[in-house]
Image 1: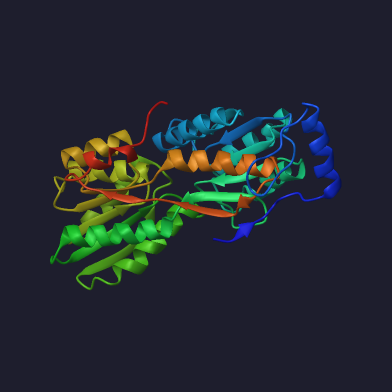
Image 2: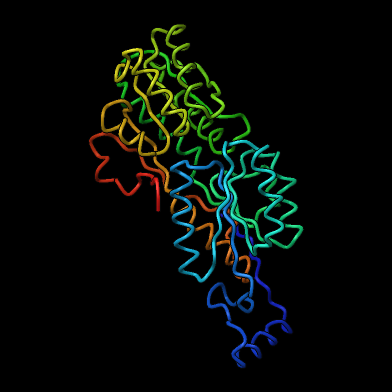
Length: 330
């Protein structure tokens, strides 16, 4: 992975830091080949993509634990919906609280660039968690699952579930311009072409609403009675797809692969409503986001891009991989 080595190596600053440390007024960094004196401002803010979603709750839990361990204070702010118009005012409002660092899951690859640049312009270190901007110059670091690889894993898993059968498969995406789900759809599309027995119907957008996802699946079933598989790119689309298939008495006959392991989807996997889940590790994303923010604040080495693990869960092996289940509270 490419590295952005943001380490201050100015002789005068180092000398001043050493004097402060000798007088008991500072603390010298212990990693990345040295660093600045420990900052007085130890406030961090996490801005998630949407309120009360198990993925982001799990991320917050990991971030809070890491911040506490490192002697920092973490505040979390969340929009009511996964929308740039709701998240942008939160980002600009954070300026008044003057945190040393902000962890953010931008809800749009372009629309959040301007408000996030306001943060960096004020000297706040910005780290992207889960989603990211197209503009790579804004954030110090981006921590996310390898989402394109996750889409490939979903295609492989769905093909294995279908076996030698033939038919059509559909992808349910959330909103155009969401970096993570777009990458998952891209990975799926590339991989599913390797299976000539499966006809790819393309992707449909759901506005990140379970009810819309259910409508999309119902309409696709009517137009394509040979539908044998659905890949839902996040938990809301997965929950909606499971509802539609259950109402149409197609549960199990149409193989559903979801993305994320929310409590509802884990129950669906256990009960046969979903045949597989591609689970992320949001707690680790949150923890690594805090680590990178602190490194940037303290003038230590920062890693520009970090990819976290993904794993396929089925009913047969889900309990042995229960550490990947998302939380509803810390």
